[in-house]
Length: 149
Image (cartoon, rainbow, N blue to C red; front, top):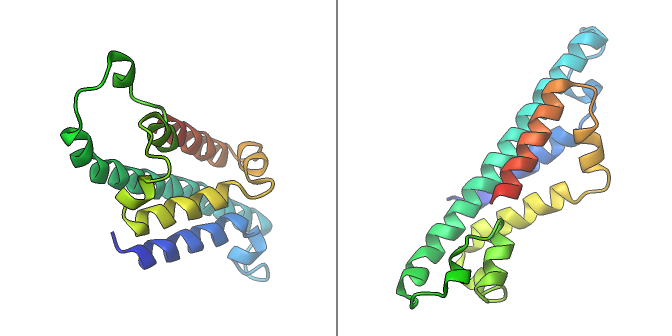
């Protein structure tokens, strides 16, 4: 993955999620309804794109860690359960501090950037509490997808 390009995409998505309807169009030429509809589409699409980028970065992390896991001896049955998140996976196998060394820096930085976006004050309340059904649906899909990792 080209790290700096993906970081620019995350930056653009972050800007889209923070934008108001008036910032996404020309209020003098378009009605408030058109601006609002565009804002809903951009917000929903940005949430889904952010989830896809996070998923791709997490997949790269696991793909990079897979050869090391294959070389490790067989684990006890309790260790055979797959953790729910990349952080839980790192904590479960004791590589929480050395996991960043196995993961390419671009993916690590991308995951940190996505985490910073969703950790912003009011992010979840604004997205999950949106009046627009497509925005709420995208926010719940984003939540389900990131919690399943």
